[in-house]
Length: 114
Length: 109
Image (cartoon, rainbow over the protein chains, first blue to last red):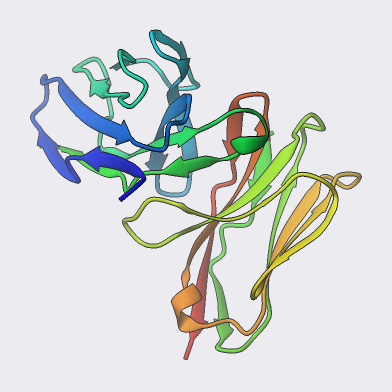
């Protein structure tokens, strides 16, 4: 079954802990993205990667880190430096050129700080 | 000023009504325009994707782009209770995407 797989679906974190959200895609898309969604604020870009071993900060990168060691995988680490990490996190993948002028989303991961 | 503006609603309509959802934008460099549907606690699902000004139809959905007015619309004909969701508009320039905050739609049986 093709698509974008995010795990875990629900995650609880204690204050001061780092957590890593997984994102895997088998769509063979070059670009991958991480967004954060808060009520009433739409989607905000955290990080994006256009190619393996390269990534760029988005609008709200502080307190987050990523890696892109494989085309299929783009994990997001929410560090203890992120002051308000409770949110819905969405991973997306898209191509470039005429075959990929849009992006497709995973089912999301809910992170709650307890 | 936000790059993309979208009325958050909620918008409540009876089953069978025609629904009009709209977004305005400020960046004339936006090239591609998309509509996503998001059910509660799920990831957004791509509904429509357009490039040029004009209309694009897919079943009960019609996407309309007016680049001169920087205005896009999504029309839903014969709306169904299963259409109840949040609808997000999105726009692309180069490799970055910009999203509206979403309009929550409720279709009453």
